[in-house]
Length: 235
Image (tube, rainbow, N blue to C red; front, side, top):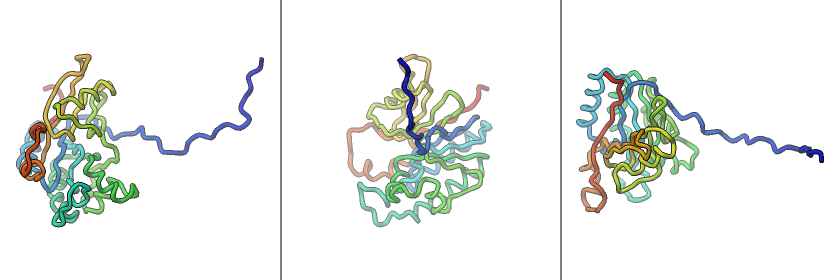
């Protein structure tokens, strides 16, 4: 019996394909969850100085670089404005752009506050331009992760866990790469189920004492822990 062929095929989708996340190949400093204007400048400066001493020439901000408190749906802080965050962020961006030849930024859930507020009509890059933070050697991405070489994923994932290292542990198994993640506000490191990959919860680069929701009201979640990651070649 002959095979019938379609007389009218379904035309292909014209929708965007999301298969080109940002990627960096080489040594880098990775800073998650700065939450400007609640960042810890002393801690960040120490991390940058150490990275420079080790010859690292790139810096990656892994989401929640800004807190976007003015656009939060959880609280109303009339004294917190996007203008103030932009002014506070100029020093951070200028320092990174001056000290490193390449700077990357990808999305976090706090940057998503802007995107949602703008009804998805303006994205992460427009946020940086609107706040006067565009620099020639700074690359801004709409993704919530980026590739570091062939073997690593840097992630600001959707999920969060009270168990340090749990989320990157599962991401590592799912995507078959080493994973370094922010968003959890904890620090932890383990191997994946195969024992061949590394899963890291990277900690924060903000000052926990600036965060009123943990400093003025106690909770049973793990303590917010500062941390940063420097990826270098074997020396």
